[in-house]
Length: 263
Image (tube, rainbow, N blue to C red; front, side, top):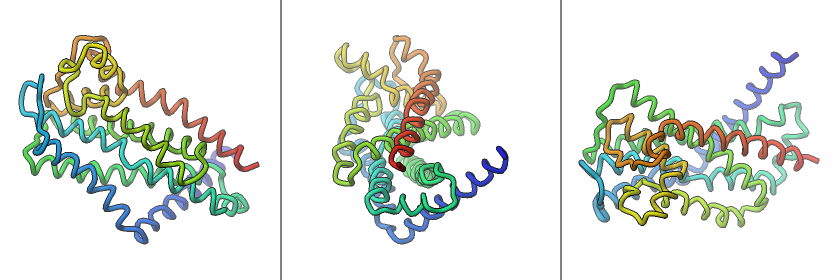
């Protein structure tokens, strides 16, 4: 029975994933905006606001991995809006009346989001190569860097799904999404923590996004500008530990919240 239940859950989740992919065909502008927005930020910071204080080496090599990390935080509002709209339009209630795994709705939404995130990474890597960024490690290290980026996205995704169900209404999603921006910009995506005031640099080094950015830079062989703190010296460990811890907290919270909404 356990194997049969798991099989039906996977099948139902894939059905929900295909539902989300069908929305892409009906709303191509939304998908396009999600792909173009990080590219615009990369070009803006790379050419209009190029910094590099405290960075040894090419600033573009430092910036692109940081922007790849920020890309994993951007776009959560689309997932959050989709969840709240389904709740408010009664779509979830109709799904509950069908013989399907209750978790398939959330899992299918997460699968579709991860597919779009992987596509965004490919676009950003391509643009980075066009403006002169290069990675200097082997293919295994590059795949490891992409894996860390997608792991971070997976964690951010379940935070977003949980907060969407807490918000309850689409108009509240924008207010919740604003919380993502300080976390993203208070990281080492654009500047080295050593160039910041001491208290701020210490906070930035412990930011989960900073850990992923530093680990990804090291795997790509790009300038890392890491400090001497424990967090900076163990960025690879934290790049795995932070997302795993966040998923361990917010995945059960999201599932529990979803079950409560079903009653």
